[in-house]
Image 1 (cartoon, helix red, strand yellow):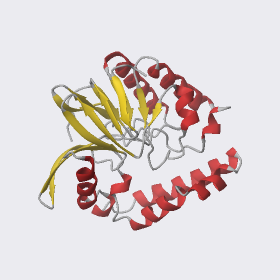
Image 2 (cartoon, rainbow, N blue to C red):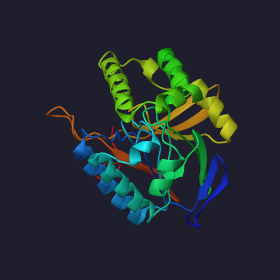
Image 3 (cartoon, rainbow, N blue to C red):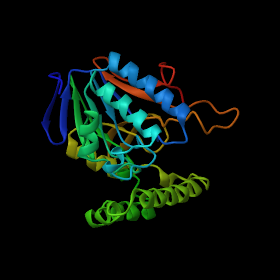
Image 4 (cartoon, one colour):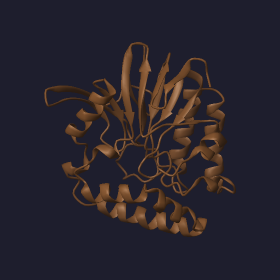
Length: 272
C-alpha cells in the first residue's frame, strides 16, 4: 500500500489526494466500447490520481471469485487492466448491487483493497462518506427484501455451491427482470431517502456523501431534519447500448485540495 494512503480503521481512510472516484461501469461481455472507455480512464487515473476508488457495480454481475480461475476473454482483459492500474496507484473496490459477491480473492488477484459497505474518506481537511448508494433507496421495498436475501451468508453459500454455468444463468435471469422493471415509469421511489442518508452522515460525522447507483449524476444540496446534506452522485457508464441521438455516458469525481469536481467522460466539468 502506498505510504500516502493509510487505513485508520476498517471503515476510515486518509489520503493526501487527489482521490478519484467512479462507479456503475457495468462491465460484461456485451459492452466492449464501454470497457475501452473505462480502460482509458484507468490509464488517466494511474497517471494523475493519488488513489482510485471504484464504488460498486464495476461488473454487470459477479458470480464469485472462482470466476477468475478461468475467466472469459472480456473478464481476463478487465482484470489485467485493473491489475496494471493497482501497480501505479492504490486501488479500492467496493460492492454494488450487481457485484456484491466480490471478495478478498479478487481483490488480492488484482492488487486492490476491498472497501466496507460504507467508508469514511479524508483528503486533507475534507471528510466524506462513500457508499454505493443502493442501501439508501429504502422506499423500493421489494429490492430491499431481495438485497437482504441475497446478502445473507447462507444464501450466498448455497449460490456459490452451484456451477459457474448455473450461477451465470441465475444472474442473467435476475438481470433481465431488473431491466424489465427499469423500462417502467422511473418514479421517485427509485431514488435515495434523505432521512436514511441523514442518519448515515450523522454517524459518520460529516455532511458530505459520494455515491453511485441511482444513475442521476450531479451535485445535490439538500436538507433533512434541518441537517445540510452535500451529496455528489457518480455517473453510470454506457457507450454500447444507446439510441442514435443519445450521448455516451460516464465520468468520475476528483476529491482534491481544491474541493470536489465532477467530470464527464471528456474530462471536462460534468453537465446534467
